[in-house]
Length: 466
Image (cartoon, rainbow, N blue to C red; front, side, top):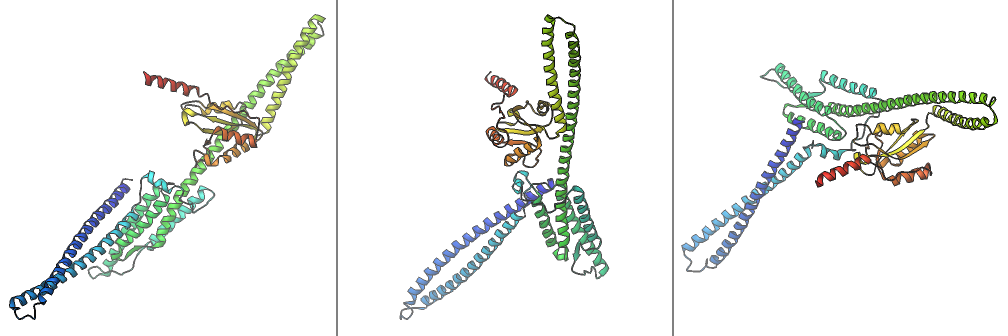
């Protein structure tokens, strides 16, 4: 990066120097124009004097002195005309030089590749992927093939060539050695710059770096034109392809990492759900067993009790049967959740202390207790806990989550990573989409408690006052 900064500063310094030179030339042009105006004025005055004297040319009293004056005036006129022509020539030369300077300044501006990331962001979205391989291994194989092609071109001396058979000190052999050294030098310079650019290529500079490689190719070929040495166009295109592949290969690897992370997270969620289901089933079955034992005991007591005790025991039996009925419903719910792998909760949560107003996370969990997932999200990685605005149970939670994400596709906070489920949208917009398309009965909490955040704000204000 230091080298690129140096080159950028050097380009700007050259442009500044050219602009200063242009300003001096323009000043010289102005001086010559003023001088030309004075000469024209002097010529006009001399012509007037000549015309006055010519009136007396044929008069008898015109003496030799007057003839001498006329001759001097003619000579002066010729000298002034000569100076006028020279001034015009100089002005034309200066104009041409100024035009050349302007053209050189424009070319220098085009050669400057701005490396500051904040300016390079204007190229965001300009790079269009050239390759569309299914996985990173295919990118890697193609990248290896491109690099092998480059090595072969160097090996067979087609990467750079010399169009002249030079002799050195009258020796063709020494001329070939000199040519090989020139070829090696131009390739080393080109490869070094390309390798540096390829190692630093990112989403916001890929297009600029491709242009930089092409300009380096043009500049090196121009610098070595006197030696008749030049890099081949085929080798240039291989370097451009290498940069494109290197960037897309890195992108594909990152996508695969994100996908693997998503799969691992999904597997962890499923494992947690299965553990929850097993523990809940075990607890319910244990509770059922206790109530069944109590029910058997009551049935035995009912067969041996009097009428007064019987009424109390029947009431107690009815209560136990209600508990057993509730437990049967709970078991059926657990069976349903275990059988239906897509049932779960879609949650809409916010964290105004961490992300500000109108930023909501729309996520999904299949946990039996969805608040466990919300509590996990509000761990030490954010300063405050999340507030729940809605918790929507669905037989197909992933589909509902995906539908809501698509509804607010253009309002994602992170437009690159789709796994970051934060959206810059109002709660009213979310509620409208949910109730219009999925569930009219969902209740939304409009104002988040954000208890710790609000208490923290009060403390900060009190400290400012004191």
